[in-house]
Image: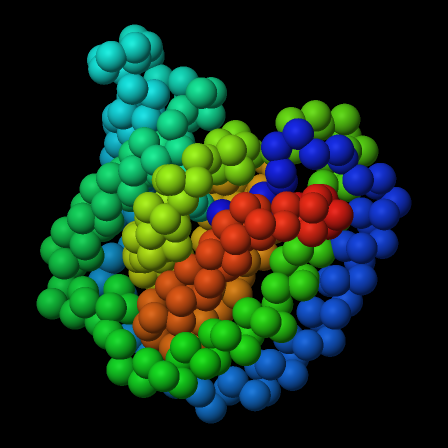
Length: 305
């Protein structure tokens, strides 16, 4: 989930965004190396020891399967075929983030996020089948083991605290770039939907967006896609390309800050050999953004996030 913008908020001045973003990036540049030193012993570096059995062919199969899944999720989220539903989806879905794949127009927040979760679950089942067909170690290779959970969670928390200012700062700097290019739609449609969600739905939305969706996304991107890319292109390139894909699937307004978050998630996956820490950090990030969006949106507005 990208750092949200409160619907209807005034755009901060570009110079203010630039200075704020640069400051927060510098803070993380100072903190992250220290956090890496502190957490080195908490994360057993097993990620690159056993190359996975699947590769780019299986990733391509999954990518092709996402098109009908996206279309079905868009139909469901737009209420097509139901009472008052339209005959066609409001827009395409994309398999990343907390509901960014949901159609944007006048979608119901709960229905949109449920559609995203259903699509991600179907994609995750396909990914598991593809991985399982390539060898008996699928569960381990996908990062589903949870050994050493306590240290991994603590390491994830330390690294996220160090990196969070930089993620917000990168978001502010990217917003400056988009403003300079004349890009007008700087608010993700799903962010606008979530910001206006009825209070009665927020508990369920938190459950989906903070617990279920991060688990499914991490399984797909850090569990399935990243190992295939690191096997072919190496660790650095594999994490970078996975992060770029993860960002692109969130849309232009979110691509850079989401990719920055993904770099952290990819690092945790690679160093621990498990999805436990990435899922925890992803859920923590989404939950934090949700709470800020619903309680003190002016804080995020000031960052242009």
